Structure formats: C-alpha cells, structure tokens
Length: 396
Image 1 (cartoon, rainbow, N blue to C red):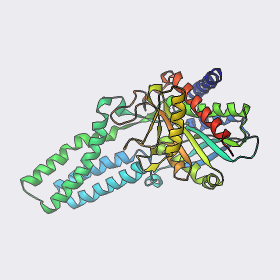
Image 2: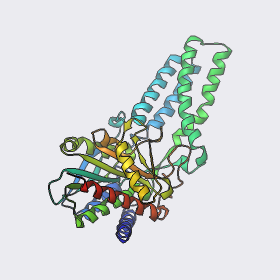
Image 3: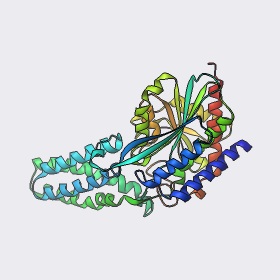
Image 4: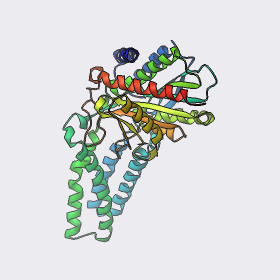
C-alpha cells in the first residue's frame, strides 16, 4: 500500500498546487489554459511524448439552453393570452428540440451562436518495452464547473425545480395544442392560468447556474492528477505490450467538448489496436464507488465488460463497488464521447448520482481538496493499476 499512498499524496499535492495557482478554471478562460500547461509541465518530467491539443470551445453555449427555454416559455404564455396558441406551440417545440439535442444528446446545436474560445487538452504517452498491442487511456478533466445555484439554495428542491420546470414546458405544448382547437371558454381560461402559474417553476431555471466557477478539486482535477501520477508510476514500472495514454480534457463542463475534439482527432488511432478508457470523475466518497455502463443521459452504451472487470477487482480488494447505467437527465462524462468512436470505456464515480440526491460538494464552492476522501483515491489508484497490470499480462 505504500506505493498507493505515494501516488495518492502526489496527486493531492499536484491538485492543490494547480488550484492555488489558477483558482476556478472555467473552460475558455486563461485559468483553464494555465492548468493545462501546469499538467503539461508535470507530464514532461516522465512521459515519452507530451502533446497539447487545441480546439475551439463556444463559451456558454452548453448551459444557455436553459435560459432559451425560459424565454420561449415566457413568450409562449404571452401568445396564449393573445389568442395565438399556434405560435406558443412552435416556440415550445423549439424549446424541446433544443433540450433534446443540446442537453440529452449533447449535440453542438447552439455552439455556433456563442463566442469562440481556446480549449486545451493535455495528452501524455508512455510506450511499453515491446510492441504496443493495446493501449489504455487514463483520463480526467481539468476545467471546473459553474456553480449551480440550485445546489446551494434549497438543494432538496433541486429535482422539483429542474424536472418540474421541464415538465411544464411539455405541458405548455399540450395546452397550446388544445387551445388551437378550443380557443375560448372556461376550459381555455383555466388552461391559460395553469400555463401562467407554471412560470413560477420554469422561470426559476433562469437562475440555475452562476457565472462563477467552483474550485473544482473533486470535479475533476484530482482525477487528472491521479491519472498523471499513475502514468508516472508506469514510467518507472514499464509494461510489456500496453501503451499508457494520460489525458486531461478541457471543457468537460461545456458539454464534453474537449473529449469530443480528442475523440474525433484520434478516431483512426483507436482502430489500429484495442483501446480502453479508464475515466474518473467526481471521486469523493468510497462508499459510493461505481462504474458506468452507459453515458450521456443513457444515449451512449459504455463497456459493461470493462465495468464488470473493474468491479470484480474492487470486490477482491474489499472495496465497495458496483456498476450501473447513468441516471437519465443527470448529464454525461467524457467516456461517452470516446465510446462513440469505438473505445471500450467506462467512468468511475464516487458520489450519489441522481437528481434526487447529490453530494453537497458537487458544483458548489465546497468542491475543495479537503472534501475528497483519501480512501477513495487510494481505492481508485489500486483498482486502475491492478487492471492495467492484469491486462498487460494477458496472453498476447
């Protein structure tokens, strides 16, 4: 366990160092770029090759779909009272399409409408002693999240506010359709009143996210630092036939844009030899450790086999672990983008993961280094190193 603790201490130290120098690291800002360069500096100390991969991120595009929905809902109500329900229906359909494509499927639907900023992925390569017959990517992301106001103010009402707000948008569409055929009378008046009252829920979504960023220790700088330090370990304990790729993605909190750019650029590389992704995100509490079998609001399948292998290793070492699909409407992780390109991928998480329950560190100013359990980082390092070594020892 001494080697595990040494790797963990180095990961904590690097995380603290970067946060102290950069503070919050919203994608598309100088702080996130500086964090990428600091990670690059650390990788240069041991990796065989280090690359900075620049891409374009449209700052603000990913979460601003929420405010577009609020605007469309407000206008929809106005047009209901102006006896133009067909306009309300069209506005609501636009809202739902934006919700589906921009958030549920993480498409880049609104990106061209927002300013271009530089994103920077950091990638380090460690070659095996002999010919590389497989490659394993260890990844995290170094950008930090915008503070979610709903997790600070009355967090127990989070699900009601988010799911309730979206539900009223769907309800507005149904009401608009009914009013096209029943434009007047008591029923029409009641339906308009219900839609108007719904703005009390939907309107709150305008204040969903702050413009300020979190410290981003557990979400997700510690994972990037952990991946880097595991890479350092394998630079000193060379593998036979397995290439290790250490990747820290930018703009995960902007809809996985960094991982998307990386996956597109390296799609052909993934086809040359078997490629596996061990992604980590939100590592806070050992008791909540689990591996994803699906991603991006259940729209992308991850590798159940890989998740099962990692759970088996965890159980052999007496770590609590399970695997499960991502909960619908809870977002996605970088693993989803690489899985789209054929990589056998999973994400390790370690916190409650549903809209009914999230840790009080998630997307809040409490996301500091002291709120990460050392035990969960120890377990993560142990599981990943064991998997990598077992994979390298397989019959070639």
